[in-house]
Amino acid sequence: MPPTRDPSVLLAAARLYYVENRSQAEIATELGTSRSNVSRMLTEAQRQGIVEIRIVDPSGRSQELERELQTMFGLADVRVARRGRGSSAKVEAQVGAQAAQLLLDELEDSMTVALSWGYALQSMVYSATANRDYAVTLVQLVGGLSSVTNEISGAELVRELAVRLGASYRLLHAPAALGASAVAEALKAEPSIASALADARHADMAFVGIGTPTHGSSAAVLSSLNLSPEEEEAFWAAEPAGDVAARYYTAAGSPVHGAVEDRIVAVTLEDLAKIPNVVGVAYGRAKTRGVLGALRGHLIDSLVCDETLARSLVSEGRALVAAAQPLKGTGT
Image 1 (cartoon, rainbow, N blue to C red):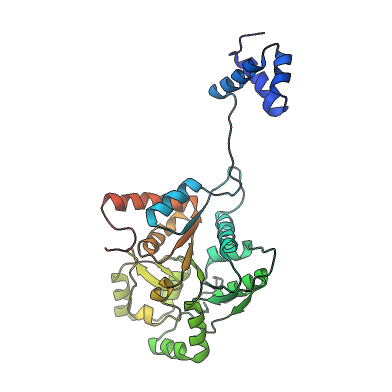
Image 2: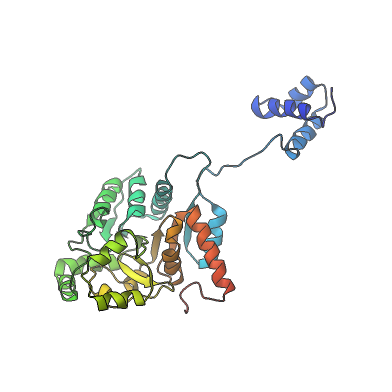
């Protein structure tokens, strides 16, 4: 036979072993060589690039990025959806599936789970499939989105997830954004609304979408508040970086106070911080600044995102470390 390092011989051995599932002893007989020589041939086939071995994680996660983000930002849990080679699934569906799995991994009977709104959470809810009913209660963190016609509301998500989990739910019967702070305060004082917000404050776990003030529902909420030019100027002067549950914050994760905050019917960022595990769910590089602010301000305890956003967050986190800036809201 030709020399054992001959590519044609290595290819023949590799086809017999990896494609036809023949044993090394059978290959040795067919090629007229020893079994130990077949083992060396298979190793050489890998070295020459004739054989490439690829390990595919069936979880669809990038665990290296997860570990780096968890260490960098002190997170309780991180799930990074990895875009599989040849996958036709949309990124929001992949992120939603990972968020739904995290929910089911953590869910226990008697828990209260609170939700905000947004497409990322919608994907999570639509990915949730349970093999039993859960004796849990689902609640809203923020009022409805009557002013944002193209966005799914928290009430819809809570109802849908309750059906999928066999759970009970309680709705917050109030709009999220109002045109005057006095109206918002009056609504929050109404017993049924006050009670619903109290349930949200005492949740065991919360899932929140992370918004960008200049885009999507976050921008639509702002436009519905009837801010005066002075109020609008003051809001943008505070340099808001993102929002969770219609509560806006800076790049360092500090609350943006003022007229916008006063006209929202939702739990506050301080309330959110008291919930044991707040899971931020987001995808896309455009969400980097908002998610980074939430991480620096310790507004979220866990994160579910896609690989693109994860890499961007790692890059920004390294830059902050290099610039000796705090990552977890310990300063500005």
